[in-house]
Amino acid sequence: MIAIGCDHGGLLLKNKAIKWLESWGYQVKDFGTFTDESVDYPDYAQQVADEVATGDCSLGVLICGTGFGMSISANKVDGVRAASVRDIYSARMLREHNDGNVLCLGARVTGDQYAKEIISTFLRSEFGGGRHQQRVEKIRAIEKERQ
Ligand code: RB5
Image (cartoon, rainbow, N blue to C red):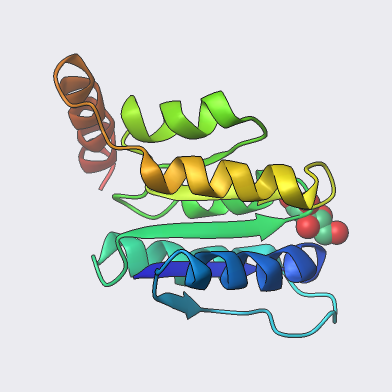
């Protein structure tokens, strides 16, 4: 199950992304926003991040204007490793090296077809483990230290 959310800046791309995800066979849990009324991105980032952190959804996709507000907010939730991604190589590395679990996109900076490739690459890539495992564990240790 993939959790997805957006603010008003990401609404059109989110609606397209849901169709792509479903056409690829994924089940999608949509946390809104559902209209083009101006909203605050942390409200949606938190819902998607919580869903991924609890394991109810394996991965999340968050879309705002730049992807920045969503990634900054989502990373406040323990266990979430989110990044704003604008290229296909980074989409793969976010999974393979960082065990990233929330992909953030900027609908105002990334075209629809390119966003589609980024989402597809992120979902098809897998965490590499090995030397990357201890680095991800150190991220977790930083979270724990500050609890
Ligand atoms: C909303 O205007 C915009 O600030 C938001 O979508 C996002 O780009 C923030 O990071």
